[in-house]
Length: 365
Image 1 (cartoon, one colour):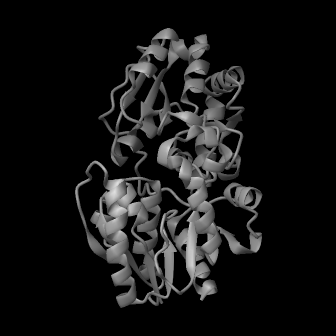
Image 2 (cartoon, helix red, strand yellow):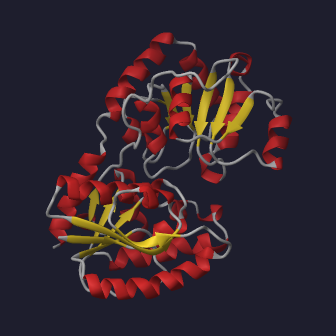
């Protein structure tokens, strides 16, 4: 059985969770199921994960450049059409929501990661406003859909009226591997800290976390707030931190996987205040590294975290502050969360994801 993955996400992302997911599938499927061969058809791509992987790929990595989102789809469509006609795969797994559908007569599979564009349309501007429309078209032409959580499946049914029989729920996993949670020297912090990971705009709800932190005399007095990823603080964010009088105790830095694992392992508590997540990989990363978790009580987060997190209403900063205070002040709670988290994270594995995805591929044929 030949499964091909199209170029889309590999031309959109230098790095990122979606492209990492497809590389994990592409590398692991042939190893677990020798009758399945995978190929990424990405004639011109910018993705670091694909370039570094052992996955079979047709194409070459190029440097990112301004205007790539307009130029690359046209060139990749042209080259992909030729490659598809020559290779004739059994299944095409589309990696995102294409403007133009590649000409392919066999079964199509599509993974839907979230329905954020449908639930929060006011958060998006410019070309991103078209994603909901393109997603609906991609969903309609797919023979089968993979949703990465029950929450995403339910949103597919709610917003696009998809028949549940057309959807398989297949959870993701953390790509952190091995004993990353050993506390190694390298990250210096004068005080204990709470950890936030990811982008900070819109539904990520970072300002609410800062507000909860700033309004808590206990948290401000005893803990810093470390933010990883998302780029340096913008002038607007710096003004906000200054206004909240927490400019010196809220810190930002970028990190590779090893440094991020170290930050998780050293943190007193990982806080995930998002208003919406299709899955929430950082929850599993934190658990893997032995970091206790506090997160929002909405969308997929209770489903993924189970009993291994404490929850709060992300729109109530007073409640958020109270939950965080009570958690960090209880060594028993922190130890329980750490133990449950490491057990919970083991429920999610890439091998399980790949095995269930193989079942989908067999079923559509």
